[in-house]
Image (cartoon, rainbow, N blue to C red):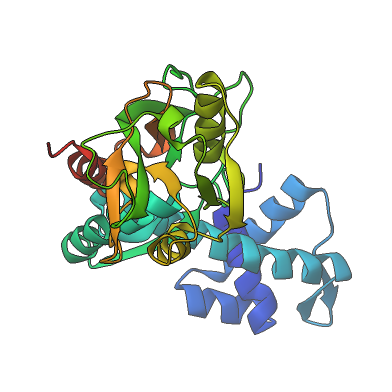
Length: 305
């Protein structure tokens, strides 16, 4: 492996065009600089400089090595900074993958606390609606398991580039949102079967695991939902519910900021539940910002009733 320090010295030689001038810039003797250049030529097996009159000039190979050396040294400097940042938790980038309802319900408080406690930390949020969709290779990912019994990391296959630790955050029920004038609006809870004849408003254009759970639970209850409208998201679905277009079923976490003309009713069916998981990149487990973000997410996801 090439010694990075020799790359640094050789780059100075090419930039200054002289062993002597490079020695002055670096604070070395000319003899020491010459020895580093000779050693680098032996390590690479290339002729990097050649004599011209009383001085030297870089060969074509030498120019190419010096150019690449600049990139390598810049990356090494960045790497050293990242290591120091991760050790102290002062700065760096924290990548968090989440899905829409967790993003609305939990992430604003979590992000506000992180930015206050780690003012130099840069946060990148990626929307992930499907399990294991590791877009951007997040350091933490909040996702919905396909089953409430899911207990293994789908990305932790043997030979995976980076392993993750997995833990459950919450198991939550589903609810139905109906117009406040609906006959079911006064109920404390309902069964999915009570909604079999209702016009439904679909609220998950991505066809993610949350919708799959609803469809499976409805099938267990003996019917298939009769969708009248495909809405792009929960908030839009609520607006259509308020206007009497139909009812919409979704996880409890997503039923926030409901319009005044709507009512939320819990669904009793055990099959209508979802499990929210937290996945943390194992190599980042001891990073102070990651540890704090994990703790904040646990607190935010804790049941309040």
